[in-house]
Length: 464
Image 1 (tube, rainbow, N blue to C red):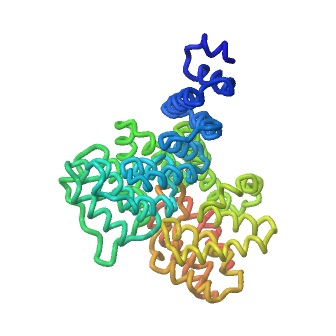
Image 2: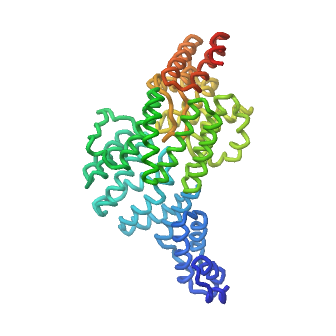
Image 3: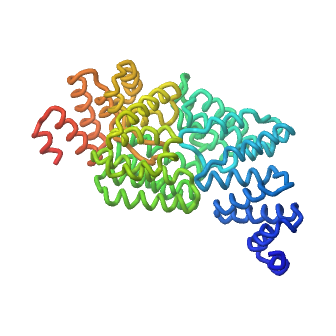
């Protein structure tokens, strides 16, 4: 390897030979070449190879792994679907100790937006909150504040999300930044004082117009207007493709699968979900696999076919257990395949966690576990879950940026009903809302649920 190193000119092979001969090479040279290789792999979206080179650097005897390597390592791990939190924290803590706020911010922001968690990231948010904003350059300061708003909104902290959005607006230097500042808090519900309107003149950039169209498409779906949702989504797709923005293109493909499901074209919906998964994986988006699993889960849940996906869920249990929505899905699958005690215990934990810390995924999580909670025997928890869902009775549920949809919320409220009459009322409400939404899939599904409950063959025949 030492001789091959002297003859080799290609970066990655040269770094490999140097590493294999590291006992005879200066540690500084080995670390330098491995770092260059890792950064090149990162630029080429070869996340796992980049992470491997950083791990090698960290294991070199007598080497003090640099902050830059730790940041690269964290980003590579996150984007490959693994967890870069430890490497990121090492880099961040070292920078804070040295009052190196610019690199502390770089560490806390590493891997975003591709490695974003749909349920938020409290550790990363805490790191960003510790950074001295006045020590940052204007552009980096604006990015940190916007990310604080974004993370707060994902965690369901509406007041913090809108506070940081207002700070970002004060820092914005141009039209594009003003538009970004306005939409950073879009996952949070309006604060108690109400959501400030977005001035039309701040929405003229292609990027902000695309993001606004994405929000409008999801909002229209939630408001049971499938036609409006489809129109806004079409405009969002056009803008995402125009900008060649991989993250937004992936988002668009995920929601296209949701709209196809709403139309009742399940084969096309599955095809689009698989296309979104392949695209997301290709571009290193951490949530790509979770989005695919969510789509398959909703389909199996509605067909009462959870047994069919149980083996896949068992294989992915460790990854699914990291998120609230994943735990919710696991609990229902466990009950369906006969491990009821484990499933019910997890459903109760999910419900309590969602109620105590209502982040962006609390609504779909409680909806998913509603049927299990209703059978768990905890009357207080059942009532709490029903009260939580009640304000959303007239809406349809969308998960995150559109990775899946559950249809009318009232059908899940029905699962938590106190008696048969309440259940009937909620199921009838779900039929009405499905008709308003205009989605064939949920029009049929909600009628079948109602027909099963009241044992009405006429309703069942209409659905078929």
